[in-house]
Every structure is written in C-alpha cells, then in structure tokens.
Image 1 (spheres, one colour):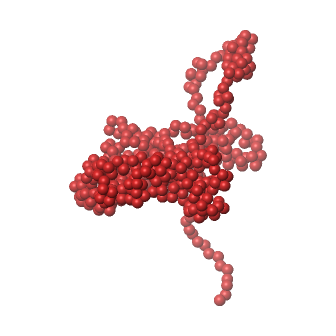
Image 2 (tube, one colour):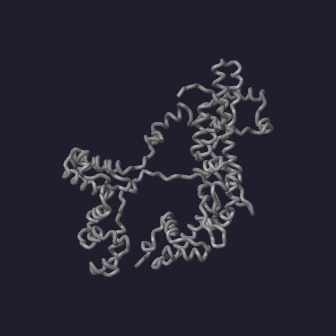
Image 3 (cartoon, rainbow, N blue to C red):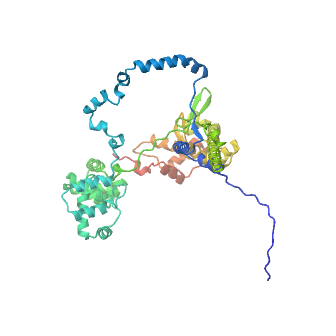
Length: 474
C-alpha cells in the first residue's frame, strides 16, 4: 500500500475562550468576599485602575474654597503666629506625648496582632497539660503520637500496635500512657469507643461504685439509644423512675469530648442581594457595600506617547485588562440582578407567604426566561445569598424538584419538607407520627402520592430522627 501526502480543506466551528471571557466566567462564580479580594488585588497590581472617589458638586467646591489672596495671607499669618505645641497637642513628637509615655502600660504599646487570642486546639490543650504532668519523656513522646491520631471528636483512630510501632515503644507503655491521657481535660479523650469514653468519665466522677450504671453503659448503650427499656427493667428489676434517673445521669456525660475544641470557625454570610417588599411589588437592591467602584486612571495616559515600544505594550495590556475587569464586573452585577428578578417572578408565592408556597424550579426555567445559558445561571447562583422577608437564603435554595399532584399540578420538594417538619414539630411526643402516617397526611393536605421511603429520605435530609427515637416514654 503506497503512502502519499494530501491536503484537505475542512470547515469546523470551535469555541475559543478569550481572556475576557475567562475573566467574566471566573467573576460570575466568585462569592462576594472573594470578589472584593479579587478587585482589591487587581487595584494593587494594575496602575490603570483606580477607585472612584465621590467628588463634591462644583458649586459647593467654589463656595467652600477660599480665594487665592485670602489663602496666601492666612498661610503667612499661620506660619508667624502658630503655637505648634498647642496645635499638635497629644500628636506632637515631643512635649506632652513624651511625658505621657512613662505612664503607658506595656499592653497599650503591644501591637494588636500580639494581643489577639488564638482559638485553642485540642492538640495544644492536651500537650500543655502533658508538659505540666509528672510523666517521663518517653511517655510524652508516646502521648504526642496518640494526640496526632485523634479525630475532631477526640476519639483515637489508630490501634495500640500501630502507635507502639510509631513511637518505638511497647504496647504496655502505650496502654499506660493512654490511661493517663484519657483522664486529662477533657475527660474521656483518646477513647476508642463511645462506651470507653463514657466509662472513663463515670470513673473520674466517682459513679463507678454503681454496678448497674456501669453495665448499662458498657453492655446496653445500644438498647438505651433505641429505647428498648422493657428488657432492661426486667433484667435489673428496676422501676421506670429508677431507669429514668440512670438515663438523666448518662445524658450529663459528653460522648464527644473533643468537639468543643473543633477547628471549624463560624461562617458569616453577607447577602449579595436584598429583596424588600414595597406595597404589592418587590424591590431588588444589590449589595455593593465594600466593593470598590472602578474607573480608568487618566494619569498614565499622557505618558504613553513618550514611552518606548516595550512600555507601550505593557501600558496597552494593563489598560485592556482594566477595561475588561470593569466591563466584567458590570456584566456580573447585571446578570445577578436579572436572575434574582426572574426568581422572584417564578417564586412570588415564597416571597409573599414563605417556604410552603415554594414552587418547583430548575435552572433551565431561569435560563430560558432571561435568555442565557444554564451554565451561566448555575455559576451566578453559586455561593450567592439573598436577604428575603423570610431570612437569608442561598440562591440555590429556590431550585428544587417537583412532586406531581393528583390534579395534574406540581408542588416543590422544599414545600413538602417544610410541611413534614411542621407536622413533626406539632406531634405528640409520646405518640410520634410514623413515616407512613406522615405520607397519609400529606396525601390528604396536598393530594400528592408520596411513598413512605420518600418521607424517610426527606426526614433524614433534615436531620430528624425516626419515630422510635423521637418517642418519649417518660
């Protein structure tokens, strides 16, 4: 078979991601905090970008500005008759300020960052106690290995054998060190099971003299969790009131001793959009607090003419980048406004009456309404929050699946979840509603055929336990 070279012409369409498009897409999916950081960073790096400063009206400036002659005479008089020590006061570099430094406390002279208290960690808290304990250096080394294998809840995640291998120690030394570590604050830390954690706390508190309490925790913790009380009453020949006292005592113990030292910090949300109700309509207000208003810096434009070719290329690149950023920010805010406006159009029932009136909604509905692609709507609704009359919610909250009603209409899954939560909050604690019963009530109220497993799925998603765990027998 002969080989030959041949030329062919072929037409094809290809999407090219220009730098401007890439920047616009990146800005769309940034949260408000990330957007402010990005703009501030660009202000530092790009000399052609500057923040808009609100200027006074020309008439007010003319009224407040003194004439040139008056300004010169005032300046000369000030230089001749100025008592700078009295004028500067406490801000003078000598005099009163120097005399006051002797009485200044060391804390006031310390930088703010040095006085700021860091959040304590479980590892640091345990290590601090170990250094104050009368244990050997070898035990401190073993304890450091144990501390390095603790979960965020304070449980030991490694076996005794592996810790002994990592610390180059015997298993007996590891067990002895672990026994000491478990009795530090918080008591029960480094336990391997919930039973061990609670038993250590019972021992330290002096409750281990009651054998029934020890056996309940050691052997029947699962029975207590699932409220299987009758076999326990027969086994230990207890009355219901006596068992309740044991349960109340167990509830005072902490099954997750390390949780209070968690490294997670609270997340504070600043809404990107505010929605206010005004008479029969809703007003959309974009939150631009802290977001700089950008403009092109005119100062460098005159220098381009006398610049070299290399400098001109740099200037043009930075000017182009600044112009793109300003346009991309405007496009982002415009897109966000249009998406929120469309959401209000589809979910007006929610803004009027709350989550029970939330309709089914998908990204395609909003994309078709505003004439944009679904990916654009997905990006602009990611990590964005809106302040509504019913609380601050993520924009993704308004998109939910549909459940078909018997009359052919649809209801949103979030509305069903809200109704399930409301039914459970109003139930009798001694006779909680089962998932099957909740499904029957939903069928009566919403005329929707919802299976028991669907009710269980929604209940689990909301963090609500089953009816057997919600039941109160006392």
